[in-house]
Image (cartoon, rainbow, N blue to C red; front, side, top):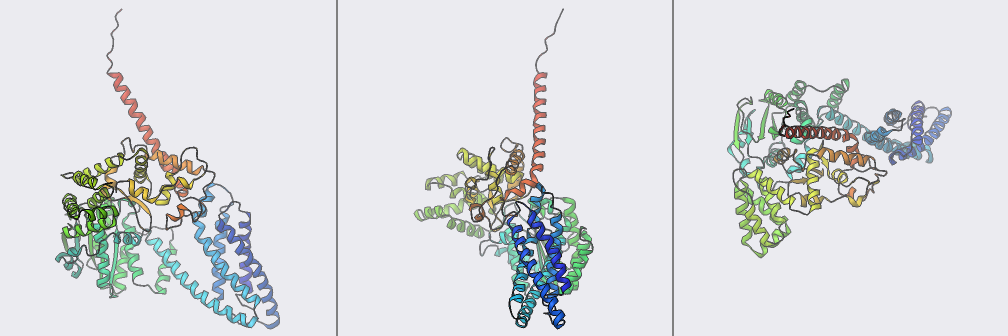
Amino acid sequence: MEVVSSVTAIIELIAVTAKVVNYCSQVADAPKKVDKLGREASMMLQLLYQVKIATTARREDDGALEHPSGSDDLVRGLQLCMVNLSQQFEKLRARDFKSRIRFTFMEKDIEKAIERASRMNSILNSWLTLDIKRATKAIGDDVRVIHNQAKEEMINGKICQIMKHYSPVSFSEKHRAVLQQRQDGTGRWFLNSEEFRGWMDSAGGTLWCSGAPGAGKTVMASAIVEHIREEVLGNEQNGLAFLYCDYRHRQDQKAWTLLGDLWAQLFRGRGPSVTKVEQVFEEVMAHPNSTPTRSHITNLIRNEITNGGLDKVYIVVDALDEFSDEDERSLFIDSLHSLQPLVNVLVTSRTIYPDDYCFSNVRSIQFTPTAEDMSSYIRSRIRESKKLASYIKRRRELEEEILGVVIERAHGMFLLCRIHLDSLSKAITLRDVKRELERIPQGENILKDTYDYAMERIRDQGRRIKSFALQVICWILFARRPLKLAELLCGLSVSPGDVELDEDAVGEESDITNYCAGLVVVEGKSKTVRFVHYTTQEYFNMLKGTDEFVHGHGDIALSCIIFLGLDSLSLPKDGHVAQMSTLRWPLQEEAPFFVYAALNFGYHYSNARKVSCSQNSKTLRDRRRSTSRIPRVSRTR
């Protein structure tokens, strides 16, 4: 009899499950999920034995009975899941340092196995405890539901693998974070401009939007994306894809990765059929470890547009000037141009349109925020600051004074508005607000002068606060990848001599926003800590060799080695560190900074050595120069 599946399939599932149970029972100090997997798999093993015996006996008595549709797929899926885990566990038999890191990448597979084993246990228990005829029907209904869910999961899983292959970077989260910064009603002048409307209506046209650093081009790009969604995406014959280039992700910004994400957005946006997903998945699995070529992905985009019946496709590329690799950027531009007139391309950049670029039907527009937009932004920030709002209640004319000075000295840059308002909001008294207004920099080097003044404010804070703020800036400047809030604060919390992680030593998000003079921000949902703007990174790049930052790699390397040497890294799941992040860290029993420290200690240590050697060489040269200036005394016999 076959109720859950054939006896043969059950026997095969018993064999591989036994291997997983055996391994789980042998692992010492494993994450809690491994123990949970062992318990669920052990229970399933016992139930499978009982089902095997029962089905064998009933087959001999009654002959083969009807079994629910889709049961074979359920057992096969669980069997593949267990085989995958068994193979990964085999690689971890040697209990060494690497195994702890390996569990990071097994967590999703373990969670999936626990969920499926739990479902199977429920079904098996039902069948073994209920009347056989009623159980057969009930289990059949459950299995059909599970089968449909499993089929949907399988298709979604294949889409995810396709996306991972062609699109290792995604811009959806970045788009949501940027869009939250926009003030309602701002940017209408741009969306109603003749240049933008002409580009929207054109066939394969290009709109090049240039503007000063910090003028709000990225926020405007997010508004353009939403505008296109509202205006034209109701029509299934239209498509949209967007990119946000970012100086912090230089290593990920290759021509093929950006083109791959454009294709992925169009592919998912069209709602591909199961047949199409299967076809693309088979192509990916034929060469799973190969890197897609730029020309191949360009052809995929072209085919997606023509075969998908898309009449008009809009592509928005923000901050193309932050695509720092010139060769890769040129290849990317060539590919976009080759897709015209099938696509309309909009680009934002700090630079005006270069003569050597080859886009078609180019329109150009200078992005300069209106005084109305800047006023709207400033008034909104004033309302958000309880202190400034209370001062304005006392002196109504203060709001107009702030508007006048900030707009005049911001030179059309929302970035400077933001930094100036941060400075004003920290003023202790109304008289301090007036003084801060007078001290707002003005002149030709307005951006550098503003950053210099912000650093003055940081240095004027108390010793401990100043030290903390400089450490935050230093870590952002030298970190190998952008750090999450929990990672950064945990990394900063350790000191030489620590033997365990003390959650009471971990700071708050407000410490970063309050003490770094508006130069550092924590992104919304992602909780990524970054500089407020690309130009802020450029400013601090020039200060890397100064006394305040020259030992940045060494400081991070020291924190990494202290962290890795702690006797205990466990933290309560409902504690302070867990609550500061909306995202779970990879090792739930470990502190967030552990994985970064393990993978990047060598990088920071080697760079610290280079700095040390360079300084020693400089010291030696200085000594030689000073020695050469000592006059020689001639000797006569």
